[in-house]
Image (tube, rainbow, N blue to C red):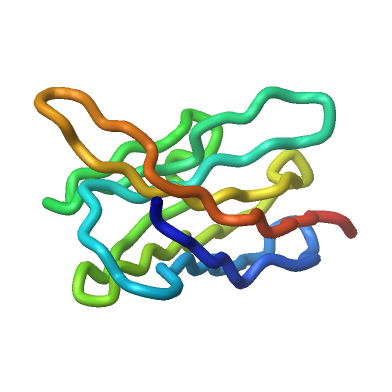
Amino acid sequence: QVDLVESGGGLVQPGGSLRLSCAQSGSVVSVDAMGWQRQAPGKQRELVARILSGGGSNYGDSVKGRFTISRDNAKNTVYLQMNNLEPEDTAIYFCYAERKSGAYYYAVGWGQGTQVTISP
């Protein structure tokens, strides 16, 4: 199990930007992927962005072109730069980490979540 701590959430106006960070707490262990999911009230949790240890990344359709995920492998920290934020981006954002077994990835830890609110 990997312990993750998120930071950087808050309240911003539409069109604004936020940067989320997620770092391992306690003993740092190697993981194969890290990412972000979000959950808005009354909606299912959805993928925001994910990045592999080798650098490949993928994004949810609703955030492509606006959000950028990056990773500092030495620190096992992942960042989510969110630009041109929209009210529909309002949600709790959860960081997660994965390991790979064969061709499959599986979650090994989740953060507690950080609230992002986009409102005038």
